[in-house]
Each structure stands twice: as structure tokens, then as C-alpha cells.
Amino acid sequence: KLYREQHTTFDDYCQQRWNYTRQHVYRLINAAETVAQIEANPAVSKLPKNERQVRPLKKLHPNDRAEAWQEAVDESGGNVTQDVVAEVVAVGMNGPPDWYTPEKYIELVREVLGDIDLDPASCSEANTKVNAHVYYSVAQGRNGLREPWPGRVFLNPPYGRKVISAWIDKALDEFNKGTSEEIIICINNATDTQWFAKLWDASLCFVQGRIKFWGPHNKTDSPAHGTVFVYLGGNDTLFAQVFSKLGAVIENCGDHRQVHFKR
Image (tube, rainbow, N blue to C red; front, side, top):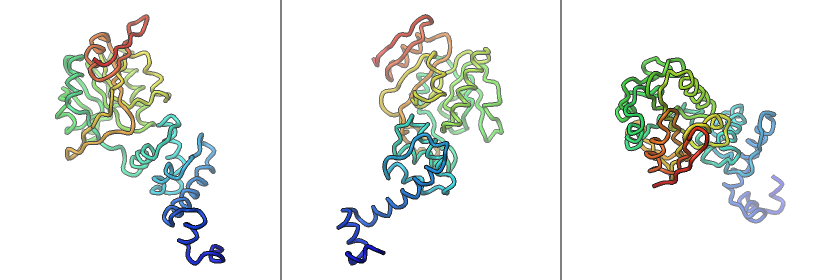
């Protein structure tokens, strides 16, 4: 209460001494407590730079904040924003959100694959648009990470850094051992992550703008990241022709790479 020596109220002190509102000062106090918790964790590779970055972490238990912050650092490649942290917090509190690929993008997938034999990370509602012959879902008690992926596959994996890495490894394994003939993957464009580094040999379409994914009750949402479609298969040229409608495509031509810009 030392501010009382020169200021009548805490509001006066905040405004006259710091030119801040009382509400913002309380946010800074809360942020300082959160940053102290993050600093105490030796696994953290980068510290916050401003109050807005850590504001969403206040919703988590203090013991979970450092881990969530580091996940946001990894997910964003070090360019942490409030939106990225808020997404990580939402997943930590509610589990991965269900967001499904809009039908117009599924139509492009079909142009390349001809048909979709399997969607290994789906549900009955998402499959009303994908129309895969077979899909694996939690409701069925079938975990796509443990099941085979035969034929032509479309994958929009669950959100989350730790989760998506396992799905990318599974896709590459199923394709390399010949179980999957072709795979098209819809993921975020986190190009500086370890899991994305495994995909640079594939053909890639970097979508221009943000896709509005849809979910339960027909709600829509745009992710904090852009989107990439990844192609594993023998029809890289067809993939490049079809998906260059969406954005720049890096085509795997075997001994070299070719870039196609949006048509």
C-alpha cells in the first residue's frame, strides 16, 4: 500500500505513475506470476515478451502453464501470438476441437484420387462430405493410428503438435510399405516443425488464404495457421494441376522439384 503516500486511490496511482488503467495493471500482475512459473521450468526454450502472449494461460492450472506455453512456442515456430496460445489452451481444456474439411476441397481430392477408400481420422458427420468407403472414428472404437490404411486415403488429422506428429509418421509408414496407394493430407503449414520436415519430399500445395473449416452444428472456424495439402503417390503432376487452383504447389518430379503458382 505504499502508493497511498502520494496517491489517494490505486486507480490514481496506476494512471499518474504508469499511465495505465487499473485493469491493465492487474493483467500485468497476473502475467508476471505466469511468467515466473514459465521461467521456473527448465524445459522452456523461449520466454514470453509481452502480457498478451500469456493472458490465455491464466485459464489453466498453474502447474500446466509452462508446458502449454512451450507447446505454443513449438507450434508457432517461436513466433508466438495470443491466438496460438489460446488454441493450445482450448485444446488442453476441452480436447482437440472437431473441424472438418469443406466439401469444395474434398472435390479436388477426388479429382486426384478418383475415389476415397479410407479416412482414418474421421466421424459420421465429417464423412457426410468426405464419403470415404471406410472411415475410422473414436465412436467406432477404432484408432486410425493402430489400423491399416489400404487404398486411396484422405487424412485431416486431429489438431495438436504432439498428436499430429504421430499421424504424419503413420501416413509415411503406411505409404512406404505399400499399404496405401495414395494419400492426401490436409494439415497446417508449420514448416519449421520437426514433423513437417519429414514431408518436404512430397508434393505440397500451400493454400492461399485461410480455409474456413466446419464442425458440429455447422459452425465454421478459420485456424491460426495457413493450410497445406500434402500428396504421397505416383500422380504428382495431376496433383499439381488440380491443386494449383488453391495456391502455390511444389511438385515432386523425382530428380528435381517444380513450382506451380496459383492459376
